Length: 455
Image 1 (cartoon, helix red, strand yellow):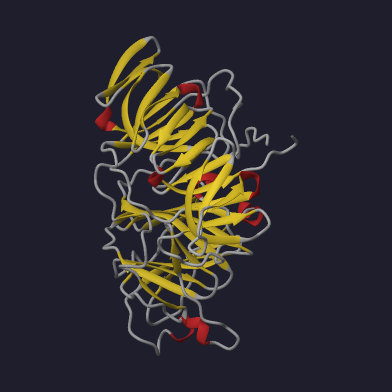
Image 2 (tube, rainbow, N blue to C red):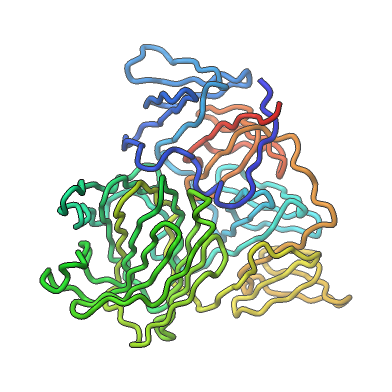
């Protein structure tokens, strides 16, 4: 079987894999799920993938392992396993093809950087394959990923009581929440006055989601009966319906008037997106970024009215998958990047205070970055850096020689490459970005086997 390189541009392809239809997965804690190309699926445990492209699967009702020809397998959704210890002092590296690796910076120069990756050791990453390096905030996040229903309040959406509307529930599986019918899930995250919330959303049909920000109620509010219903404090409702996003201040009494809407035309051609909501309570502003691009800024003429510290997700129809949910304190700095703007030849170092320096990086290590600016050398302490955007090389190398596997990490991000083997002892990948590397299998949440196109 010829499984030559198959790459998908864009970061969202990594973040939203596997590509199972939202709402169709059945929660099965502790079990892997195998999906075949003919549409069949079964639960059990992935035992191995051999160099001769045989996948071994243990089914609880089978006396011996079952062998599958790899070309018949679409993907494997991996149950949570004991994770290898994470590296400290982390950063996130984004490759030009959208792949992501997380790890600890060990060093680098004008040609490559060295990254210590949990479960894989030290990898050498060519600079001409990299797009950016983001420094992980030292302050722990308020929420870093979805790990289960514990700590969340999950109920059916209040509209399920209306005529013809069937009740639903959010379900959890392997780092994501799923809903296919009206349902609500909420948690008091003790949101601060400066907050950033990022998440990935995939949908079937059209998205119809409402997110309550700074709410004091962990149960959903039926807006048509809000004045006669249970008491609640004022909150903000971010609503995403099809290609339109709105922000409403919601109070117990009085009308709910939109602060303004924005048309997200790109969503009409997609089934997933990365959302980034940032809130500055002191400045009375709420920002929305979609796939890294600032698309809307809201300001309440009556001042900031959110009275709680919780967040609530209410799916009203359709089927969606919510994943990679991360909530942190925000420093108030907004990086406004122009959509599809061409990258220049210079490296750009972004500082924690929002300032930037452009030039040619000659050395990079955990202590600092050496950058040449107009023939003058400058040293920048690494502690003051939030992100590095690497300049585009004159000719970016073609991504040849990779195979058709997309491996999604449990902590977010993914890599493409050849899966040479998989066993309890390790998963061996060969990547066009960093060569051959052996990973701890517990680092992964899913494997998607990609078919050739045109071969």
